[in-house]
Length: 238
Image (cartoon, rainbow, N blue to C red; front, side, top):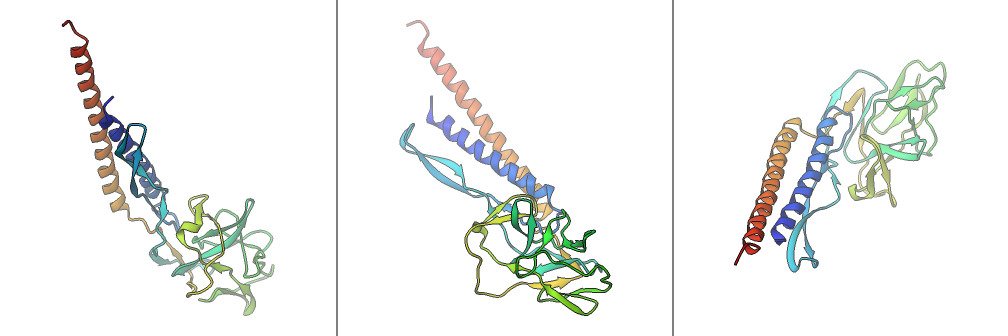
């Protein structure tokens, strides 16, 4: 079989992965703090077909950690991060990171996020507010006040994109040590960060990837038809 059909197949598989990634980005265009996936391609060699035959392969999706737009909400428990960094929350699977600052108080007076994960303080403990807390304020450094009394500081950490693994639309598991040097993000109270993925770009990407995928599928069909005619001609009467 011609090596061309294998090259086209590799390209089609790569475009399929790119389409899946773009679809996830579009699905989360309205998700608070969502960080888009970016797909990149690389050349790989296949000794099975030819030692110098190059195919396209997909690298693991990378996270685009660029800033999303910040919008005011007026809710004192809503916070956004301006700059690099993450909030830390406690889930059933351990500590996770998020940029989603849509916080609220649960029945036990614990500060939790939109999925119920407990928001952690700088000591790694759940942030507990007094039961009778009235006025709550969160400063730009992440310090939480309840009725003028300091409760503690939100745990803010910073990691490189390649240290993070997405474990949900808005949660990340981190490997290695956080970045200690550099500036911490500014906490913007009464506001939320939106997704950093542009919906218009997403539509353009879907069209482009879909057309490329379809072209590669047609190429494979063409190779198959050509080889079928060649086999028939070679196998015919002499």
